[in-house]
Image (cartoon, rainbow, N blue to C red):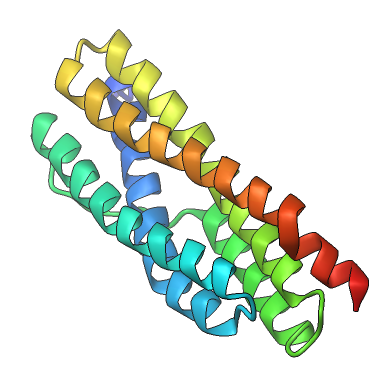
Length: 166
């Protein structure tokens, strides 16, 4: 018996499960990064991202509802790897002047992954005619891009200099 070919609907759903897992993993990792950060500005950035991540998970649950699927995650090897790198930085650079620069770099790796995923999902939602999903995914994409920009500014204005100066 021939296997049914996979469709863009299937790929959209699989990728949605992937980013849902990723967001949940990020939500559990951010408090650890907040605690490890030495800079109050970086702690505040992680705290802000934690709140945004909660809202982003709620938006993803709305997208699952739009496609009439249960919100479940599928292990995302990419985000597991990125968060493991972040944990390694926390361990290897604890108490070091370069710790915050490393944490910030790990956070930006997360942002870049999320930007890639949300951009793709938004484009596929457009193709599939899921207009409500398009606006939900675009709202999250906008937040992720703003967070990435804010982290870049923080890196340039303070964190990288502090790592270098010590």
